Length: 493
Image (cartoon, rainbow, N blue to C red; front, top):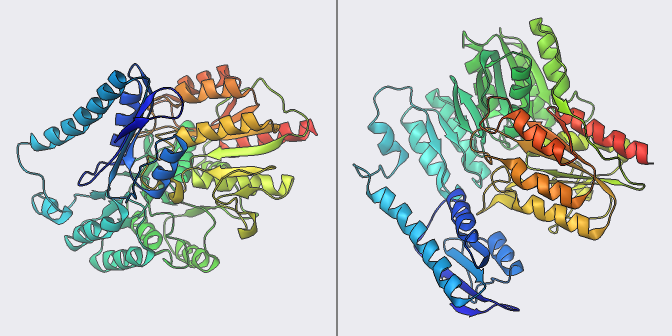
């Protein structure tokens, strides 16, 4: 349907059935079409409630009830010609995707099980990245075929996760995930992994960005990893009971290339943490805990302790100085893409600042609510599952965080911005290109935890220099970044 947009210009809003594309591809289509002359705004996305809400805020609300199985196409343009060209460009991009699939020499396998059946050897690892309601079935196919599986998908019911991991234990394979964003298996990077050197440290991680932080710090110190086995953010919950963590510990203990093991997680269920600690203490391979919680060491401190175990000197972690002090009365505004990094920041900040509100709060009474904003100290995890349904992760698409910075600036509330920027495979190819201008426009003191390596496609130093040129203080360590932000706030009091 086409109708006049509010104010000058025209718009097109349509819902299409029988079409599915992953959020990354749809984001690319939106960006490409949005760059066309005469196009003011574009949203091409699955019609999830969050995306319909986003479309409504853009003045592109569908005129009929929408369902997540439909594709929402919304475009605002200056005139009819520009609008027609933009709609045609969307159609062409989606049709090209279908032609590419049809041009394959052989029809693709319809299930993971069928694809594994055609492969020789038992070493293949399956990767499942489909909408959450269908992910467990595909992963179960891989487990039944005797293969380990990485489930990138989120939105998998917890009871299905438990059933998968129990079946994997019986079969002698490993289920990484669901919601496993990062893994490195025998040097092969999967998901949002960084380019790190091989070495003697095995990592078991119920945290994607936590795994990236520790592996990148190890790399900066000249120490590499044997494997990074992500187990999914819920694995250390009481409901799942650490099933994959215990299996991953056993696998690394049996691996001759692994001399030390590091376990990384957000705050776990106490009973599960105790069970993991008991198992770790029984292994032949020494295990260090980087499990976050009140009173526990931060991730950087644990890496430094591990380096001491290995007899490796702790380096000066890379950083860049900032150019702005905090204004009087400033508060902390942490806008994160990594949940574990957000938790680490809150655990460090709360003893100094008092209550910090969040969409993933340390205590339930500090929950932000759906608008994700409040006066005072706030840390938002834009990578939380509730904010990534039907849209790309903020490590790929910075839109929600950039909008939050713009709203904060418009509010006039004095603040210190604390941000993470996570590099590596699959992440935004140049995150500083969008973030640096936003920081300049905001004019607020900004501190960035830049997680990555020089060998990453984005290059740590290239990104650090661009962000520093925008006035931000940049740190390779999230803990150091958080403490610097706290120092700025303390100096402003």
